[in-house]
Amino acid sequence: MARRLRAEPGFAWLDSNRSEARDGRFSFLAAWPSDEIRVEFGADAPFAALEKVNQRSKGSVPDGPRPGEVPAWIGYIAYDAFWSSPVRGEPRFDRGSAAVMLFRRYPALLAIDHEDGETWVVGDDRDACRLFCARLSEGHEVETTPPRVGPIEVDDAKEHRKSIVKALEYIGMGEVYEVNVARRWSAPFAGDALELWQAMRIASRVPLGLFFDAGDHEVLACTMERFIQWDAGSRTLVTRPIKGTIRRETTDDGASQRLRADPKEQAEHSMIVDLMRNDLGRVAEIGTVRVEDPLLVEPFTGLYHLVSTVSCVTRPDVSLQAILEATFPPGSVTGAPKVRALEIIEELEKHPRGIYCGALGFIDHDGGLSLAVAIRTATVSDGRVDYWAGGGIVEASDPDREIAETELKARVFLDAAESLRGGGKR
Image (cartoon, rainbow, N blue to C red; front, top):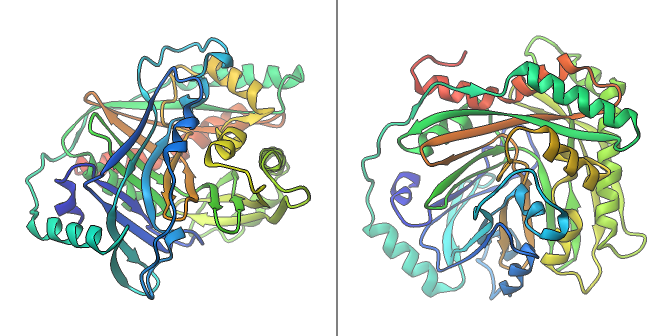
């Protein structure tokens, strides 16, 4: 089914390749968008474009997913949206006219229920669903060019070490408590990007993946981190920041306990939980911000992560724009205090992040929002594929350990690229 839809305009695949995580009951396959919200770099208030969204459910499918679980708009917000407005100051990098937000409206799509093993066509109404089915039956698979990943270039580890050391100096001066610093892997790319993303899916099973064909670029995400989920009906807003990582070995039963007990990882995680509590507090009803399941160790392919849940009930007047202005970019991939951390990232990193460390997901049929953090995410554009990996730097950080963590997080991309060359997983 994905191969058939791949040939159609605006193909998108929200993927729950569930592994052992709690998120992601449904996967969704979509094509034939009817509308688009596209905001380019330089917009003063990029999230204001979401005021165009006036989504309200017209009902639901009996026994199927609820309207609040079904995408109406699918897309992303680039990390660079933060630097779009001139009031943020002068960014180091020229982003040109790159899209900093892109969402497409899908009147109907396929919903795959991984718990009940059922597949639904869901949408605005019966007519939209009938049209989707008719287009699907008329479509056919097309021949695609096998993907080719050229020699991979990576930001030099010695240079990355210098960035880490400089970040530690800023921490020592009291300008910031934590800052996330990343490095980039980049290679020539030709062929079908969907095959590269599917190789990434095999290398790392996660609950919040996305393949999004934007026309002039493609987004390949294998992310496990929930940024925000907002239920517009109950006004419940939830974030599940990930901070703290350790390699997962099949023969090491004590790794998760060591991660939870590591003082450096605890400090890194606690600062971001506090930051997210503060961000949610900007739109919350007084007294409703809660931290639930703190320092939970969650297993993923090849690693363990520390995860906590922060929630609140938003004020009645809160909009999508207000939520994003309060919380974006995600605190787990920036640092604390957030604005100063963003300035330091702009100074220390070698390239603009683009979509990486932004957010991706959907606006649902009730007007709610479901976004993941754009980590473990590659972008394909202009004959190249780019992938980033980083980590949070705190006072107790060891540069060698931080460099090793970026290489661990890059395995999903490197293993996928190697498998396409016929070398298998290395």
